[in-house]
Length: 112
Ligand code: AMP
Ligand code: ZN
Image 1 (cartoon, rainbow, N blue to C red):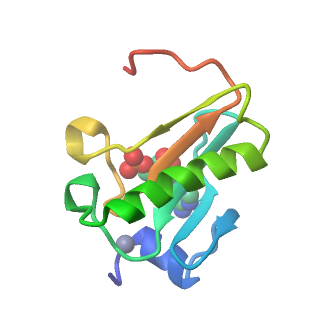
Image 2 (tube, rainbow, N blue to C red):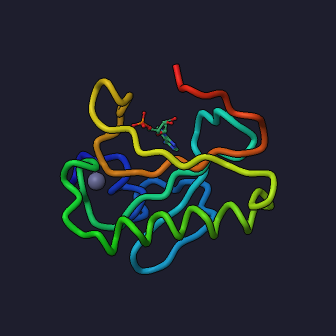
């Protein structure tokens, strides 16, 4: 996808603040962090959102990556939240699947 922001990060055209990368996923810091840790985990291949995810293994891998990154950054014990926003009511603004990983402050529930 040539006009997709996160595909441009995967290709290296735009350089995010990367915290983890392998052949399947890229994890980088959110440009507008909502918590002391706010990382986005994205698949390297373009998937528009959770509705379009056709690969359970990839979804599980993204969740495992979220846990790994939270651990590496020191938030495994204090806790964190991982969330997929899907479409308008879910608050999705970038239409390339991404898993938010937020930690470092007490998060409220339910979300607003
Ligand atoms: P969502 O609203 O769930 O689609 O989340 C998209 C996220 O991407 C938001 O939290 C934005 O702050 C973040 N974002 C947008 N542009 C960039 C960028 N250039 N680098 C890092 N994060 C970004
Ligand atoms: Zn994309």
